[in-house]
Length: 145
Image 1 (cartoon, rainbow, N blue to C red):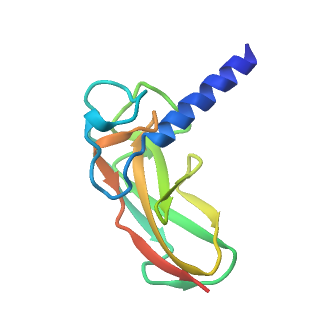
Image 2 (cartoon, one colour):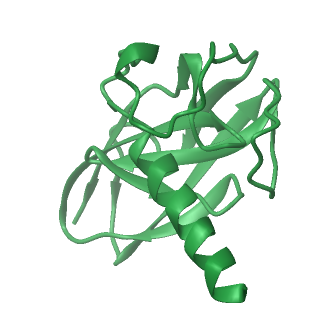
């Protein structure tokens, strides 16, 4: 029984991460969402999202970067749920276009190495699928030396 539950949770998370779709900022049409995406119209969210750290254009040093996100008009919730509300969800972070999950928080450390990075955050519903329209932060570019 426990193994089946773990397998089900892993399957849902895999589908949810895949459902985040394009990180280009262009909304993914409902017809092109991955298989397993909840049917019906996705709700809009009143949320706004911005990255407060690192600062755009900044140069930092070290092997980790502390990313802080400001979320207005909604809240991060711990539970993954199919009973979605427009004012509750999770934050996904894209580092150079690669999806990172922010662990039910608005601040987290991520490993980095020297180079130039572009990061962008997205507020998604509590089922890990995007709102419509998608809620993205402005992209931030920073350098690690």
